[in-house]
Image (cartoon, rainbow, N blue to C red):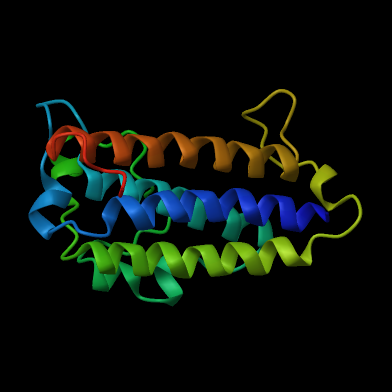
Length: 175
């Protein structure tokens, strides 16, 4: 199995979790919080997708799907290519109000397609490329960054499924 196939399979599992968890949700479900300090499903899905989009685009040297696909307009949010939600206040979290689960999944699908396209370009020792990020010691490699994105997104996808279970009486996983 090629490295691109292994990594693509990892990202496809995140997509599958989101597809199942968001399948029957309303726009109200996307913004509902199970507790006052918890993040809603819509924000969690937006955040994990923004993180993947921004970081994969940076690795590939490509424009973010967020901007080139006008997903910021479709989701009614500013086009800031640096905003992934990291460090958002409660008010900023509440401002992410996706009109529908299908629109959020559309953004994730477009990001997944760009991720797959990037992963298919990987050859030889591309994953060993050291990134120019002086805030880390040692600086990460492209491979470490990709694994970090996968780990973070799996955590957030699990949170999405968990929050859905809390909101719907633990019925998130279809029988």
